[in-house]
Image 1 (cartoon, helix red, strand yellow):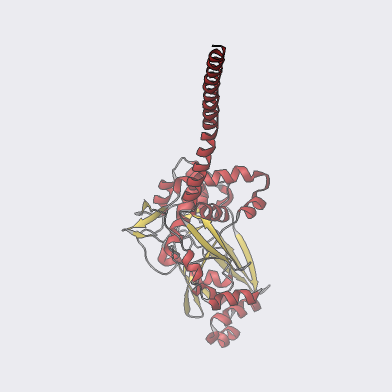
Image 2 (image 1 turned 180 degrees about the horizontal axis):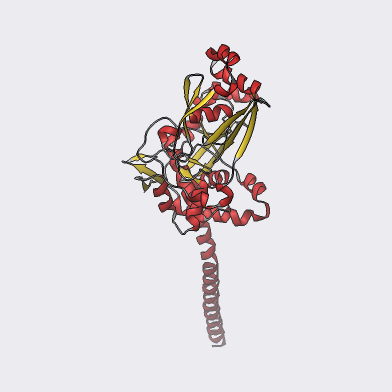
Length: 369
């Protein structure tokens, strides 16, 4: 009988212990589960974010370091905007700049070619790869110093709103050149470059509301012998005439826009585009005036504006943004008739193109350093 009671007590103790064990196990399981859910969620979201980030990758060849960098579209645009426009500009101007850059990139490179950084010193490279302005994160840190976090977040915020957006005209990717500033109006494409385009016409630009720019002139002086050397290299058939003709009659300005942009220049009877003459003399812009002083035997050239004058003026975009314009309004003004379209980026990559770069090019780059 006593043995039966002992067995019953032991059984009840075992039962209670098992129940208590089950309860403790349940509580531990619930604790672990609720504690780990955020961890799993964080890991999962990181994986998704990484997937999204790796969705569209662009490979860029830095010809200074002979290395290939692979970056996301976001990083490409962040570095490109930082390289092209001051981060202190209003955010709507930065957005307009980003769309213009991305459109220019798509038209020039697509996703099928390698972008080249710093490749403007050797024309042989341009047959293979396209030149592009970009500042890496470390370069941006050096550029902005203590303001790095502020400007980095500002540009990334702009990129978030315009990523994948490009300008189209008649369902074709537009040509979207841009420049620093102009005097009162931009220049039609066929005057600044080579062809007529219906969305690259002369439009007003407000940066001259800023008196500092309106009155800003850059004056250079070129002595007679230096000018003669420059003209002889460009026009070798004019050597004899240059020696025998009065320097004040060497150069004649034939045609210009109402606000002073030079369309045609005549050098001893031979015509050249104003933009070509600007490049020849390395002037800030083709909006210039010229005179010759026979006493000092010096040409004096005064320019207003900076850049080719075609497309979007960066200073103009800044002024419009300060007036409350959104980036799409700024772009519609400087590229009239274009429309913004968004392209899918998830599966875009030009990584294969990197592997197909001509071996001769890579050897040439390596031998140069």
